[in-house]
Image 1 (cartoon, one colour):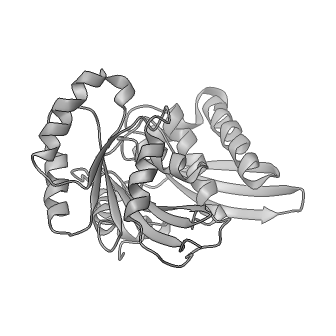
Image 2 (cartoon, rainbow, N blue to C red):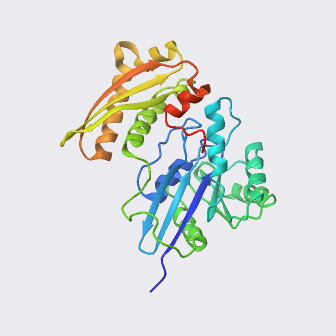
Image 3 (spheres, helix red, strand yellow):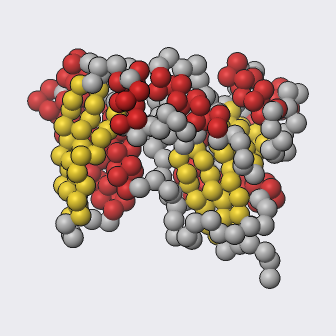
Length: 297
């Protein structure tokens, strides 16, 4: 009988490169929020994929960027910490024919570790296949990758090949989590992130990045779940945008969030949302911690 294998894998890369989409594909369920806005992921998100003979624990990290706030500094620190003490790293890049400054910085950090790295060139559905060779050459000149795997996480192209490469790197080991567990995030966190995703998807410009969600009440009443949440923004003008004319934007966000929550919790959801202002909360340590971002990690 084949031995059971288990291990830990980190996903790293610049913001909006597709890490959360790939995590959801690997795990087979939606556990990380997705939007076309950069810096969507704020905390490291654990995703657990368990099959008959293997369990892989993935960490989806915040995108590495030049931070402009204390929250941004926390996000970058979280991503850099996730490169350590893992069995493999998936370094996601976009199919652009040059190695950017952010990617150069990540490569320098990777050189300090002896962990095997798979270069994952995502969004290949956006380019012609013949353009790949030049992109691969530019990256492999800078780092000795264990493998290079072009994929489209959105289209599920190349996912099976990526799994195969990963399986070869995972050592024998125990099952760390129950086989039916797909994330370590508590339900309250998943609910909060669901609300934040709907805001990210429906609002433009600077408003979404100044948003934090606090779950004030989450009570299971048998056939229904009652959820009351505060949505915090940084300016009074942002509050008006969030609520929208005659409350239409808040109704839309609430409806979309409730639909996803009902699928996730498998129950009817009563959702009540309130919008409040906390000026410059992303630079205030106490508020950052209060909204669930552990600055001491």
